[in-house]
Image 1 (cartoon, rainbow, N blue to C red):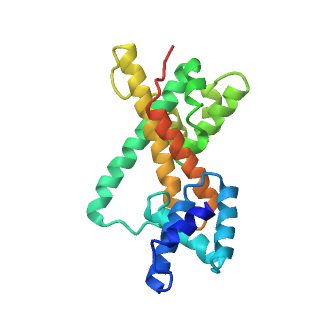
Image 2: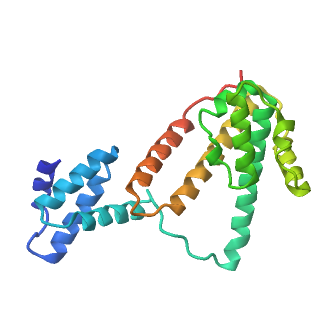
Length: 232
């Protein structure tokens, strides 16, 4: 890697501020190619030492490059009123998908094991959805699903009613096994993708460990798109 940077230097005017800046921007982009966080940090330190720049400045540049390339996102700005309705509709669709997924899991324990390979409790929206998922996964790990036991955790009438609705959501009439498998895959992808988007939106650009984790999640998501999920 260090040798490749020596070759890269020849493409830039290292005597000018502009050339040197462009060189470090390209270096930051290449540093992001290291998937292992420890390895990337070691190279950041080596580059900073070799080119007489502060490690902190180089880390910030790498984080900024990640933001610009879509691997991380800056803090979101307040949404305009005209965009709020669309966002609300999207959020409602995500919640419906989460409800349908929980219904599937509670109705077919065989599917639970397959779904839980891709979806975890923290992929559900905070609040009742995530709490129900946490309790459901805990029951599964302990050997049996008991929806009534989960509902007993919610003593407020409104919370109890909403929790109960999470186990009785159908997205549409599915007539064939193939349709059901396709619908299940689409819902898993939608829920997982939304979870990654939310964590990316909340990620501090300077959080290299968090960035590393999200990069791994995104790779898994892309791999999931090509898999066949059987309901048998």
